Image (tube, rainbow, N blue to C red; front, side, top):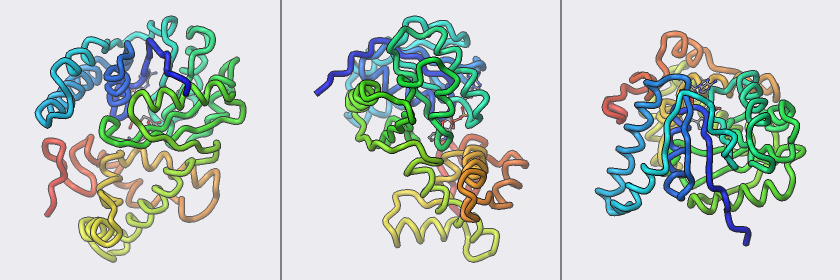
Length: 293
Ligand code: NAI
């Protein structure tokens, strides 16, 4: 089995996903720099990682030594200047093709030869992102799930030109951070988002049509179908803006009405109701928990 030899990683984007990706990488012994344009986001990211580790210690899942070592492996920066030493680059900025391409161009210019250049995109074409670089063979999708330190799955997305060595090294990284991986070819929404958006969109249309309340739809799916979290609470956790961007892209690419963004999602995003991160979505969120009526 190929061992993961990654020593240094740069994660770009310190929001919902980036701070978690940085945490699991640092916990696996990788020197990790988390980069965001916004210092407040980085401060919040550092506080969240520390709180996650504290909870792990309180539950007996993380030792004090492992916590100290993870924190020592982590650096936070508003400047993108750790790329030259990074053998892993993971991009976790908003779901916008032009933005992602611009960052991959920079990574291509600065990362050492052979570095894995990964995107955490939920839906966008990995092959198109790779086209911004001169080394598409090293570009791959590493699609993590929220919250990253808890969720077991890593969806690895093979671009058209991703080579076997990059895939093998990405699989080794997944194992090192304790995730179970699936490998999926590059198609809009991959395996997970394509199915997840179907369910989320339909649940939103049911709220629009007054079929049932958000909470009852979620309870139905949790208790009737064994989903750990209902589709609307999950939409709140992912972020309505993120889900709307994915749905818009999938509708453009796949054309089926299933992916047509529901009006309620557009209205809520326009009103700033983004879910957990803004404090209100289909639920009110207090201290990181959904308040149920
Ligand atoms: P977010 O909005 O929480 O965080 C994005 C961060 O990127 C922000 O803090 C922003 O300041 C930063 N940023 C923007 N431009 C930047 C730049 N040029 N340089 C450095 N930082 C920059 O977004 P989130 O939810 O973490 O999503 C990021 C990516 O992960 C998206 O592609 C999304 O589709 C994907 N994803 C999201 C999941 C979720 O549950 N939210 C799950 C799996 C994937």
